[in-house]
View 1: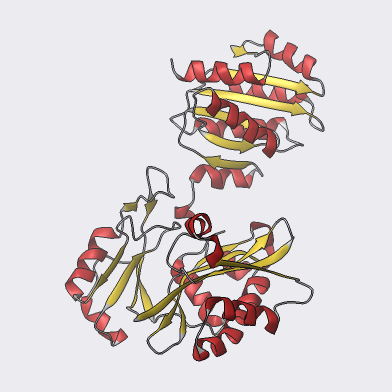
View 2: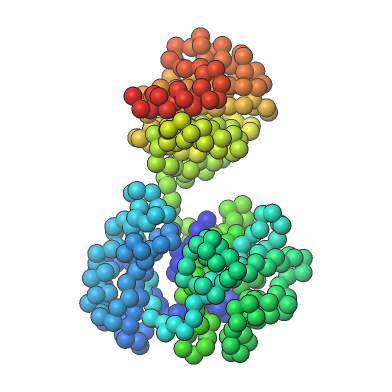
Length: 387
């Protein structure tokens, strides 16, 4: 689960981590005189959506003119912002965060994340703040430091000194770094975060460390014990189909293509999508129905896939291990019979009870294409989508 920037800053502030003073605006009938409450002469207005690259897309304004801020708010709230990280539709702007402009002396990149390979908490830092960390890693990898933290020991003065020396901090920010990183670490662990990215972390004119922007992601599996954070979830920033799929324990991600995919197993789903792309097609979604799926979940998966008006064909690819292919076939037939806007179906079944499942599909009153293998299934789906 993602948090908005303003929510992330509220959380950081509760852990005594310095952020710029600001307030949230949710109404485009904004009185610019409210800006005087910040007691500065320059402000930053940032649209609040679950996406990076907002500045490049026109979602951030820095101005000393109150009327500019007012007009920005009026023009943006209630509209969608499209960035290279969103879909073509973009994301709805419900609110705008207004904060005091900062005098920036230095920009730093800093993040905490889970290193899946080492199974440890990982600190990543770079003196090139304000940039995409992937770009830094590609162009100047020597400017990045990675530090793994043993969770049963926690963050230590050694880790803090290593980061401080690498960033070549002056004495005042170096002294602040100890409590700063320690508090961030406690926040990361206590709130079950999977990602905490501060980009940029700045050193201001007073040599103080300040979080100028923040991205926080909470582990979905831990939300059951983070009830307060769960109340901050903004469903308007999530795809309605993904929300519905989550209720049925279906792993669904909406994409921009026209070939609907229903597969059991994430690895097989990725392989299926790769083959579709290889043969010139575009997947409309990633959908993993799981290894122990039922006919009811298959029917719901069909409903979710077909709610995407771009879908021209559905490719079902099931490998029967725990799941029985004959039960899946029955679910497909039932779902197809109950669907009014059915598109062409291509179904590949392999494994447990596959022969019986295929026979059920052939004998049904539904027009279903049975491919010879996965490659044939991908080719057929692309051909149908392009008709």
